[in-house]
Length: 383
Image (cartoon, helix red, strand yellow):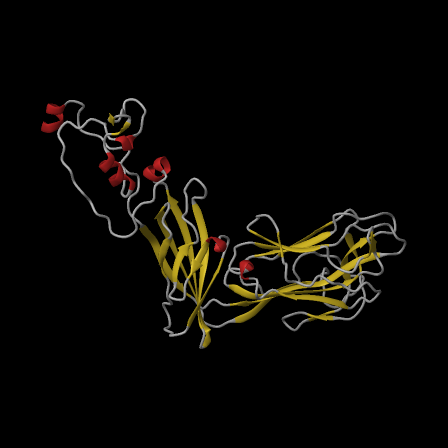
């Protein structure tokens, strides 16, 4: 019989948390203490951590990448603590070129939005084969270990001077793809550097901040038959509003659309063989009261259909109509069942002998795994 016939919704639950929004962040000074200075011990562990989920991580790479003493002005972290300069990440080129120069942070952004980043840097006259370095070569993000994507709207320009106090920052609040994700990696890259005496790049005082919005976070799991688009209607559970706005985020947000009424659906018919599971977060915000926000996390499982997989047909949307036709001793003569032994269809002048059944099957559901009780008629009738 058909493996799955109906659209199913399962495992729905809601978790109410505090309604207060708060600014959160993670800051790396690359040293262990606030006030020791250049004699401090290097550390790549987060120095100030008010990030509410997980432990933010930092790493860097490059043929000449290492730590060094740093100078300049003190830096005030997001929590108000002031850190004197002490240590920094550096890529020196006095003894040779440096390639693969990058650094990155990884954070869990569940319930976090309006993300911003900033850092302090010194380029000190470094050059690539194309000339003076005046910008990052790339600034990218990755979700849950996937391939990196560019922040195409972010300005990558840098000042190439000897100041220790240059600040680079980026407002990423419009990049909803990096919000509400269990793992987001942000990676900055510099061009490959040529050898120059007494030149190096320094990076210090790296910080990421965001708004933690734990108002209400609900979760549901949906099982849906392949080739079905509609997933359901999503509305807030803790407030009412006549002016709702919707946004989608999460790993597979691009696969979905949501209208102004909160109806969530796939952009195209999902096919089990192509992808069997999806994750999307529906954000519901009150346009008249910005403190009213709910996030609904939806895990979607696509169910394989024997009929669709074998015949590549769409099932009818909505209510099913069932036509029951009792037939005595019907052998598999219907053209819809194909040409293979023992399913030999009836042919008339080389054409299908069952055109009406063919049309019925094309607009309905074809059972490809149905059986009778016994292969001979008397035993089947009395069983």
